[in-house]
Image 1 (tube, one colour):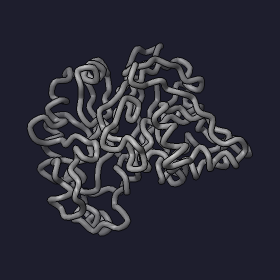
Image 2 (cartoon, helix red, strand yellow):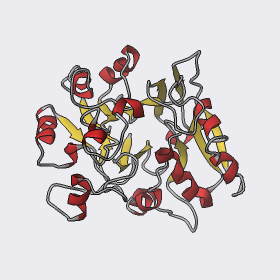
Image 3 (cartoon, one colour):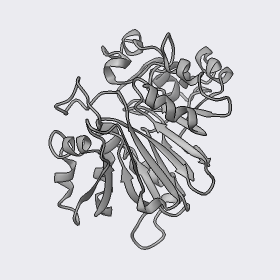
Amino acid sequence: MQVLVLGSAAGGGFPQWNCNCTNCESVRQNREGYTARTQSSIAISSDGKRWLLCNASPDIRSQLNATPELWPNTLRGSGIAEVLLVDAQVDHVTGLLSLREGCPLDIWCTPNAHSDLTSGFPLFNMLSHWNGGLHWRAIGLDETSSTIDFDVPSCEGLHFTAFALASNAPPYSPRRGRPSNGDNLGLFITDKTTGQSLCYAPGLGQPTEEVMGYLKKADVVMVDGTVWEDDELIRTGVGTSTGQQMGHLALNGQGGMREYLATLPATTRKILIHINNTNPILNEASEERAVLTQEHIEVAFDGMRLTL
C-alpha cells in the first residue's frame, strides 16, 4: 500500500488567506521552522498507478500539480481513479468542482454525506452537467450499522473497513449539532499481501471503544491534530468556537488526543493530519512540537509518502 499526503492542513490551509495570527504571519515571512500546507487530503494505491483520492480539498489543483504520480500519462486522464469522502465538509469536497473535466467519476461516501451533497451543498446535482457527473458508490454506515467492509475496484489487494466517528455534520446539514452514524467516518485499510494496515481518521472528534480497537491494531495511524487546546481559536482571537464544537478533539489536556495515542502499541507509527493554522505545533521549534517528538508523534506534511 502506498499513501501520499497531498495536504496536511485544516480548512483554510496554512497560511489561511485572511489570517495574520503568529503562525500565519511567520510562514508568510519565511521564518525558519514554519512550512506552508494545503488543505487535508491523501491518496492511496496498491499498484502506484491507480489512486483512490481520499477527500477532494479546495487545493486539489495545486496538489495534483505537485504530485507526479497523479499526472496524466495519456492525452487526457489522471492517476485518480476514484474518490472517497470521509464526510461532506466543505474543505473535503469542494475540490470535486475542479475535477469536473474528469467526469464521470465514482464517489464513495455514506448516505448522510450523499444527502448533504444533493441538498444543502448540491455538488452531485451541479456536476451532472459534466459528462455524466459523479456516480455515487454507497458506504452503508447508518443508525443500524457503525462499521462496514468493502473493496474499491481501483485498489485491488487492499481491504477497506469504514467505521463511524463521533464528530459533527457540516453547517449546511440538517444534522448539524446532532450528528448520526454516517456523518463522519474513519478508514481501516489493510494490504492483503503485506498484512500492513493504516487507520485514517482526520475527523476523530471523540474516540469510542470501537474506534480505539481500530487504532490499536493499525501499523500506522493518521488522525485529527486540528488544535492543541480546545479553546485555541478563542485564545488566539480568531474565532468563537471550541474544538469540540467543531467536531475536533484537542491534542492537549485531560482526555486529549495525546492521551489516547499514548495507549497505542510502541510499534505503532502515529501521525497527525488536518492541522489548524493556529496550532503551535506548526512551529517546529515550539515546546508543543518538542512534546510530540518526545512522544514519538509525527506531524504530517504536504508531500509525505508512506509505504506499508
